Structures are given as structure tokens and as C-alpha cells.
Length: 221
Image 1 (cartoon, rainbow, N blue to C red):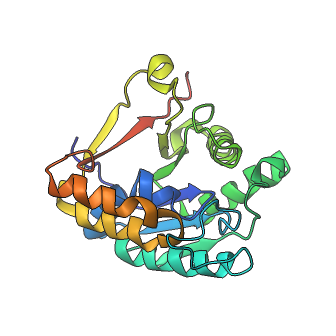
Image 2 (cartoon, rainbow, N blue to C red):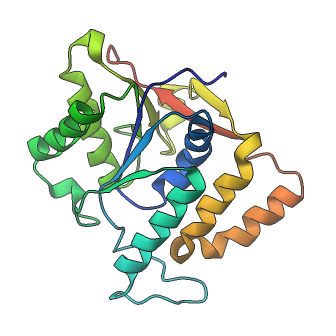
């Protein structure tokens, strides 16, 4: 589909690299158009399962490494407004619901985004993903209908297509595919083990990185 004009985009994910896998190409396309993008990353992913391949991080050094990886990833996407929200990895699900909703509301009140990108509640697998998506959806739900931003949501649980159908937003990111790969590479502590496979697939003509897909959230569902 053709990118819809936007005045401001807010991206809300819990972990560094969530954006790389889901929406880095879309973000880069919008930044190329001059659309402001704010990325609110809730944690530093300090409990990430990987320590590099070969390992170059320790449990003690991983938070700072992931902070720097996130900054580098944002450069590849063109994001100049990165907000590190300071929550702890793998504990977002235990945060007070109203605290989470208010965190998102404050960002919306400040930025007045026309589009928000986040996870699709119920179909995002990881508890932190689910808690993030729920908070964003609830914050937007409480807004007057005529003021609500559009929500592009990412769902990838095994039952997503069976229950929700195919994603109804598909964005061709062919022109910025290399930027998406570089964003993935920036998160080396978590992605180094898969990058060579990605590059091989691209070199062999695999077009799996040509598109990013989202579910347009419908509050009538």
C-alpha cells in the first residue's frame, strides 16, 4: 500500500530490537519523507537471552551494550527522538495498569501523533509485548473517537492469522531493505547469530524482507 501521510509517529515497544524486526523499514520510509518519529523504548532488554555470537557481553555489561545498540539502530532508521523509559526488562507485565496507560497518555498528550506503532494485544507472545500493546490500546481507547491516532499493531503468535486473518496493512520496504538489515545488525548482542543467514537469503533473492505487515487496530472489534 501507499504510505499514508502522517504529521507525527509514535513507536512504543518494550525491548531494543522489537522495532528492528517489526517496523524498521516503515520507520525509515517515513523519516525519508520528513515525518517526525519518536521511539519510546520501555526497557533496555537487559534480560536478553543472547550475549553475542561469539559472546562479547556479560550479564553485568549487557544493559549498557544494548543501550548503545539501540542508539545505533535509531541512526539507521533516522530516528532523532529516542525515549528510554527506564522500566525493567521482563517486569513490564507486572507494572500497574494505570501507570502504564498514563505513561502512554503522557506521550500522546505531548506529541499528538497521527500514527502509533506497537504490539497487537493477545497476539504478541511475550508478556512484556502484551502489556505494552494493552497499555497503548487502552490509552487510545480513552480518547475521544475523533482525536484517536491510527494504530498499526504487530501480531505474530501462531494463531494470529487463523483468528485475525491476514494483516490488512502491507508496506513495501524494498527501497530501504538495507537500512532494515543495518538496524538488525546494530542489535548485535541479540541478532549476530542470525545476520549471516539473513544476508545469505537476501543474496539468493529471497524477498521476505521486502515487506512489513501490520494489523490496523479497530476499536469496534
